[in-house]
Amino acid sequence: MLRQRLRLRTPRLALVGRVVTLLIALALVWYGLMLVLLALGTDPHTINLISGYRTAYDFLAELTPDDVGEPLWKRLILIGGGLLAALIFLPLAFKELPRPYLARHTLELGHDNGDLAVAPRAVERIAETAATRDRAVTSATGRFETDAIAVDVAMSRAQDLPDALVDVRDRVRAAIREHGLPDLPVHVTLAGFDAKTRRELS
Image (cartoon, rainbow, N blue to C red; front, side, top):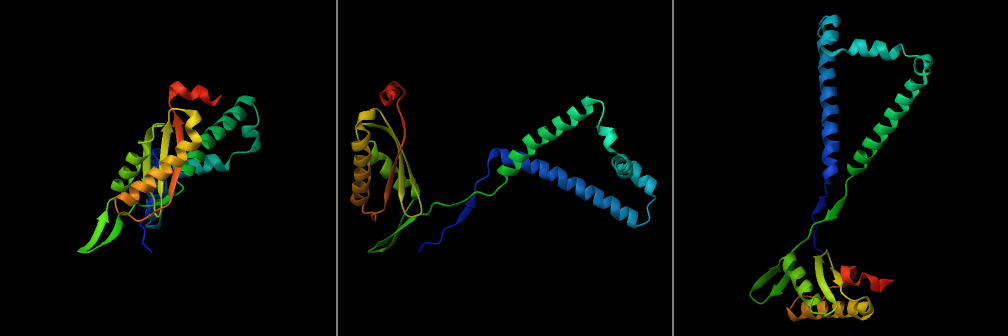
């Protein structure tokens, strides 16, 4: 069995989450440095002037329910701030979740004079060319997966759908054999219709 490399996809929004994480990390480092200075005997008043840690602590420690009770606009500000933070940070946290996938690999073939490696894109190109030979297919995109070939096709006529998908699968299989490649499962997926013929679905 071929050993596959595991990769992680990084959505663009995840980069924003990493910036937020970096800012939090820098804040933790900064206040960690303040603790070190306090441990070394630095005047607490000087540390508070630099970081404001004691001022912020005293303010938060002295808050009571009455401070956020009346007037009503204070409650509305707190509610709005909480909802805004949730709407911003929850999607960022979701985007930070790892999404592993197997990297494409070359197709290794035995040969009389040694080993022959076929690039993934070459296999995909064979599948795409074979798929577009069907008159109902307007475009095709192939993906060489770990142990199969996936082909997404766009078609021009809805009435040709059942027979065309089977024909595409058979054409791709025949092309794979014609090029001397090992038989692989072929998965054909309908990706869309031409804009001019979408009314045929109704």
